[in-house]
Amino acid sequence: QSVLTQPPSASGTPGQRVTISCSGSNSNVGSNYVYWYQQLPGTAPKLLIYRNSQRPSGVPGRFYGSKSGTSASLAISGLRSEDEADYYCASWDDSLSWVFGGGTKLTVL
Amino acid sequence: EVQLVESGGGLVQPGRSLRLSCATSKFTFDDYAMHWVRQAPGKGLEWVSGISWDSGTIGYADSVKGRFTISRDNAKNSLYLQMHSLKAEDTAFYYCAKDGGLRYDGTTSLGLDYWGQGTLVTVSS
Image (cartoon, rainbow over all chains, first blue to last red; front, top):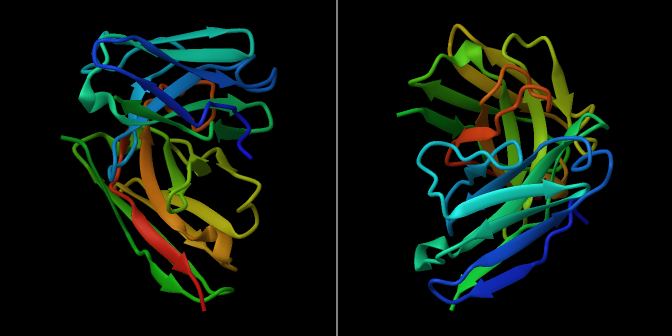
């Protein structure tokens, strides 16, 4: 059971906009930044969003992160086949540890 | 290009020990915090441990506290994870990851911006 809650799966067709949610509590998402990672099949995770909504250089503007209260979201617009991957949210928890969501498997139909 | 290369994984019996290493290059190692993150086969990510740039602050997940020890050698640009009293539930790919900030906690982190390819640890008799 992961500390942060994500839907196990999401899907969309090419060109669509999809949103993945991440729900936490006051000790993590509610009081700390949220980070998003993308893990393509058979590869190591890649940082997609840091500090709620910042994109590292090289990450397309199609990826957008937001946070409100104890929940966060990752939106992907203009969905492409190469976006098919597992997506994880993460946050620092005031219990002095990093916590991850269980991951969301995104399928591009 | 920043490189992180893990080594030391393998098959080990329950109760035994193993030491993982992470050799890094192409960045100023002692300017950044480092982490170990693991992923059981077919499962999600789990943070294991983190260490600040100067080894001044260190943290562990409750699941490994008292059994695992993280360390770094800034002169060798390397990160380590000493694992004792291994259990079947420690079976996972272990990733070494660079933090974008100085400390391993959430105060300065800019996310885990570079990851190694992972090394598989299998705990089984």
